[in-house]
Amino acid sequence: MSSEECTGELEYITSIFLAVLHSISGVVSIVGNAVVLVSVYQTPALHTVSNYYIASLAVGDFLVGALISPLWVAKSVLNVWQNQHPLTVAAELMSMQTLITTTFNLAAVSLDRYLAITNAFYYIRVMTLFRCILSIVLMWVFSVAFSFLRLVVTKPVDLPKLWIAVAIVGYTLPFAVISYSYYHIYKAAKSQSRRIEAEVRAVSTVAPEGALDSTSSQTKRNRKAANTIGIIIGIYLLFAFPSMVITGIQLITTNNCLKIRIIRFWFWGALCSFSSSAVNPWIYAARNKDYRQAFKRVFKCWFSKIPRIGTVGSFRAPMTQVNELPSSI
Image (tube, rainbow, N blue to C red; front, side, top):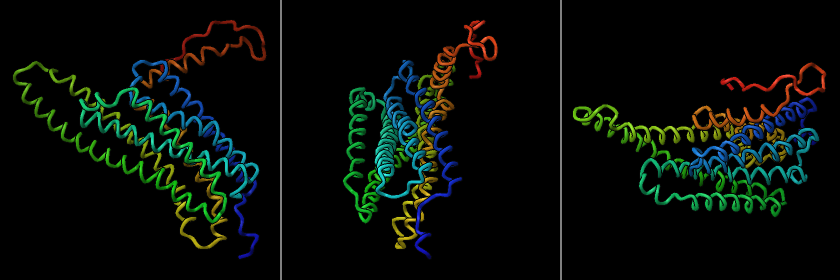
């Protein structure tokens, strides 16, 4: 194998194509997560502990679109693949920060759903707004502090050790919490379903229909919220899988040339990983009525501010008043 082949450089067409895809992903992430944040802020029904964690997750996803995607666009266009290039260092630092913030928020909201479903009274007493905000602040502070290790670790020989630490802190620990939480969530869900069925059969003979509607409805809402978070976690893992494979190959291979050549696949792996930030907002809307209604209000407000032009090419004031958007928006 010649030395010329030991490069992570992309072909020109590939680099432009990747830049376009990163740009699209970034724009969708910015718009979608901005809508999530505005929706949570403006909708009292969404002012809950779980939704504050969702909002924190949306901030991280917004930053992916606003900061990380542009860095990868620049890396693609300029064909930057060297480990110590400033663009690479900046992209990796931001990637570490958002990775840890995202997985920690997913772990936190999983734990939140676990407590809400398995021990509702304890949950109400313990999961206060203050503790929620404090935990979010601590997660962000830790993720920022940890990511700055990328500025300290500069030797190529030490980078694999740093990424092993990232894998342990950013994947292993949070997903251990997530796995524990969801094991007990589904265990509790089965138990609650059996108990509710037994209570319905017992009450139906002596009480009017609907006597247990309130309890059953709350249980269903909690389970649906847990399922929604489960879908988000599944999507995140699916999109992050290519990056995990690339990282694993780079860590275990002893072929230095292969380590360099595989860098070009990081452009695709990063695109897959960060695309989950563009998908998440639409999962919230698809799964939650409050989010759907809030999304409609936000988009209606935004589009109502766009002036209608009376004729093509005319710069006159709008000839007709802006009507309401169709309900399908």
